[in-house]
Length: 290
Image (cartoon, rainbow, N blue to C red; front, top):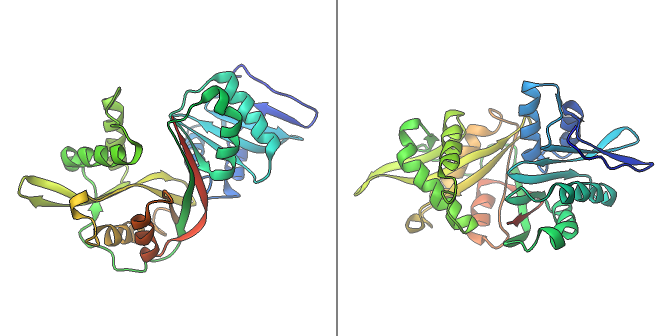
């Protein structure tokens, strides 16, 4: 037991969540819950139940009705309109204190939790309240770039700087601040797991990355693409469109039946790229950055 329990006549929070029940809850919204589902499925592969503090559950009349994965990111899985479960998850979060770098997932539960947590956890560095959630479950609508391939360990000397540049541009600070080894290990892990894609070429200053993307979260139903990046000086040449088509072609039906991603609503060039590739909007994510 993790040291907390909140009870009422109709609902109970629990630190001992049955992983099979958690997976079934996530399956009700595979795209929206992929960030949590990927971690739950990985945990299931190692053991049948979880008493670890990173998985919080809310039960109502003996049924698991909501959960949150609390790791580097806090990821809620809550059915639309379930304000009571948000109350419970917020109570747990407040009792434990903020340990995450972001709150992320479908917009309704993320923003609902944030309204409950903002006074104690705020101020946030940034709240991105409208991030279109996109999905594709068939072949790309444009020709894939034949030069996009899986990353290899030999690519790490150029791939890590490209990942750092993407992260810094997207989030606003370098991921190497504080704990550079952990970020480099993350990139290395994605390469070793066959979840890193890139196009590179020999340039005037050596090998350079022209396009990169990763499968940042993979469940049995959805592979979520993250970290899409093209060097600023090469944008507008179609590298992202053909590159994303290549990632989709390599992923749909091979890694997972569906491929998803979420993007900032103000990133019009990226939205045009994903529309050309054949992605369609299926929801809205939100991210609260600390």
